[in-house]
Length: 176
Image (cartoon, rainbow, N blue to C red):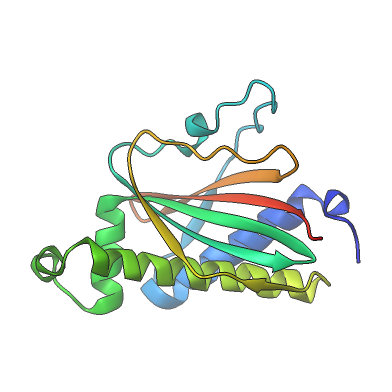
């Protein structure tokens, strides 16, 4: 099994791109197109908040994986996009979603994140990195950033899905 620092950036990019594409095409009949990425900022000067680039209220789903490679994947989306996806996934109108409240949207975003990270994890397993998933968590808010531990490898990818943007933030390190 190779060490995480021996895995090329293109492997991470291709793996997360395939995972996002597969979930959004299968569940929502929406293509997910990877947007060209700027170079990652230097660790000592980088501002992770700067790279998310989604305005307004955010809903962020996260699922971890533990094993030969351990880490977290955060999926950032606008609250409007989260509501749109949740309505489609659950067969609910915007009015029904409003009445049901944020908890229903949180559950749907958690499931979307779980499917995406599960697809990513399965591809890691196919490459010889055995790992298991953690349960999904949801963050809501605006003007916040995730600061990774210094030993983690971080990759941020932006996807255009219809008129919306989805940001996948990968934090990984070699498993113990």
